[in-house]
Length: 169
Image (cartoon, one colour):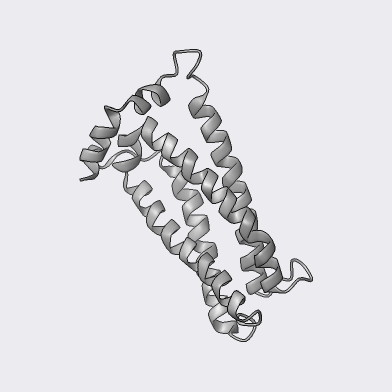
């Protein structure tokens, strides 16, 4: 199924445009996309780090977790939108390298879980601002898991460039 999607993407006009680094009007698409992607990663990792450290008891600010999450969530979701767009561009440019790579698949699975935890953080403090303060064990567990997942996502994102596609094994 993913091989079919990869093959189809390689036949699209967008693939032709994104992958062509020989023409003046298209050669900057991928480097610009990668730059924006890296900046988006920096924003997300900073914000997620701040939230998780707060839940782990490392006071990064005098704000409550509810206030801190309210301030960081727009940054997180804006950066995630940029990451989605730039990630799609990079996947269309090199669909086999991405879609047929187990590291990419693991990254996406970790990303889904980490995003779900982030959504849970905000959803609970919207209902009850003191929610995570009253559930320290759960807060520690989720913050630890979240940090491990986000660091794993970061590492997997870098490893995609160095680990071959599934069919090479």
